[in-house]
Every structure is written in C-alpha cells, then in structure tokens.
Image (cartoon, rainbow, N blue to C red):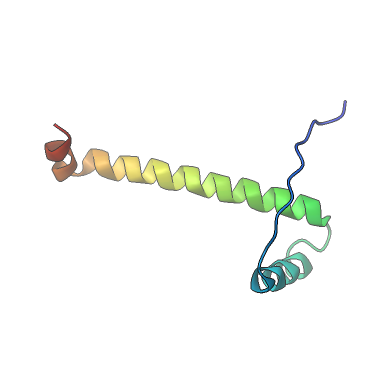
Length: 70
C-alpha cells in the first residue's frame, strides 16, 4: 500500500543550504535528502506543539493572566 504524499518546493538562503549540507553529512548520511527534510519538518512541528503546550501551562499557573482574562 503506497503512502500518499503532498509535494512541496522550497527555496533556502545559501547559509541555510550550507547548514543542511552539513547536517546531511553528519546526521543523515544513511538517508535520502527527502527523508531528512521530512524528519526535520516533523521535529520542528513537534517542537512548536510542545512550546504551545508550555505557554498554555505557564498562562494557567500565572495569577496575572487570570486577572487580565476575567
């Protein structure tokens, strides 16, 4: 059963390209560039979700936020 995928095209600055090339060589040498990008995207999305959860937790524990909300 084939996995359905959506194709994206991105442009990156040369500095980012250099970082990606280094990352490919150092951490993703056994995988394809596409798999590297998929992994980086998933990791980035997961990090953003964790940050949002952390921000909500901080807001729930901060008395000032309850005063300004209510």
